[in-house]
Length: 83
Image (cartoon, rainbow, N blue to C red; front, side, top):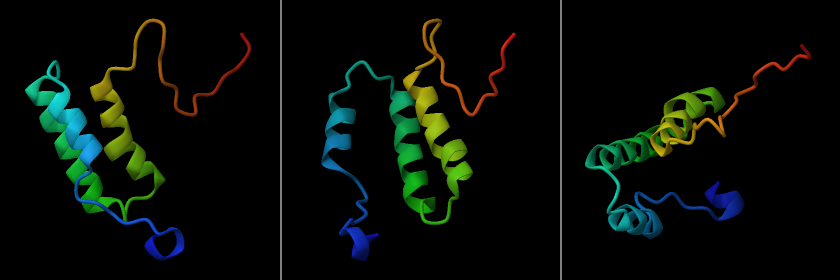
């Protein structure tokens, strides 16, 4: 990635740090889990396949954001059929 696209891996990013520091309404447990997920991703991103990335990082991160509401719900390759 670095050679092909000039992308370098960062151990932390100023925007993420700024967002976490400025989120006064974020509970300490949530902040702790986001930091954990971030470190987990940094440790495993090179070896995770697509499913591992979804289940070990993306899904827990989306769960922390609490996107599921009565008006909106995430679907993952759910089969649709006419009733």
